[in-house]
Image 1 (cartoon, rainbow, N blue to C red):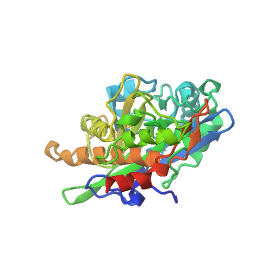
Image 2: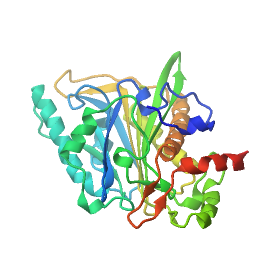
Image 3: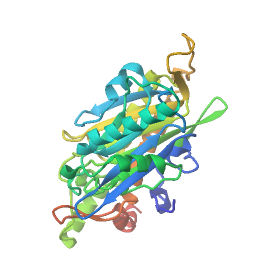
Image 4: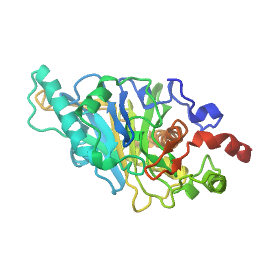
Amino acid sequence: MSQKRIQDYQIKVGTMKAGKRNKITDVPGVLVGHSTIKTETNHTGVTVILPGKDNAFVKKYTAASYVHNGFGKSCGLLQIDELGSLETPIALTNTLNVGLVWDAMTQYVIDQCKKENVEVKSLNTVVGECNDSSINQIQRRAVKEEHVLEAIGCAEEDFAEGDVGAGTGTVCYGLKGGIGSASRIITVGEKEYTIGVLVQSNFGSTEDFVLCGFMAGQWILKQKKEKEKMAVSECDKGSIMTILATDLPVSARQLKRIIRRTAVGIARTGAYTGHGSGEVMIGFTTANRIPSGKEEPVFSQTMIREDLINLAFRAAAEASQEAILNSMVCAKQTVGREGQIYYSLEEFLPQILEQMD
């Protein structure tokens, strides 16, 4: 995917090694797909994260969720927290489309199970959301079943970032937000593992935006004098969904500890987690699959030693920080519903880099 990302501006986030694509799909088996809606009234869509190519309901993934600030309408977190497992793909969309997307994803998994002669009596479908109503006419609930199926059908390793899928109408630090991703490689023992992150960015006050230590938001605000219709965000609200995938063998408890560290990456970009901003994290590992319940009554899982987990903590923080920056720099300038212009970080970067030197 030929998009100019934050690393292409010679901006290095952190010290750790990134994966081959520097995306969540560096975790083997993980795929991401989008369906994007851009019309006169709607700028929205859906993004789907597939944890693997097989049926997650038949063989579940060890998973965890964490709500850093609960101003959100996500579905499926309660059971993830209780059972420590993920049994469907993860879908991201806009706030008022959660129900429709949940219904479409539920039907998709039911149909998938029918083909495999698996009976479904209960299903914990997972859907996350951000409110994109500054750009999107959200009450139209434009995302339909066909868009969810399109996102699933086109899921791949090398996916687009920025104003696509669930990020089509989102805003980050008063600039255009969107979908962003990054990954980090860690070595435990003699084996390498991957921590991958994908975000749907829709949060932050413009003045608070920090780019690798530089108060970029305050510099951007000064440009408003020359840009009459330039949009800004005066308070930290709007939410960010963070999805973390790994092939590191961890328990659900350990995984929850890891995904909590993505909040560090969010904070490094300047946010303080405002009242109206929902910070929701969901994580899963491909290393410890969970039988459906009809196999052996006892099964075993592997997990890293607790004293080695700092590597994963650092990786989660770095990957989430870079994913946010990628979501912003890959997104293109977009006009809001009231005529305001949400500029792309890309448009300011050359001048910001001069200020940083």
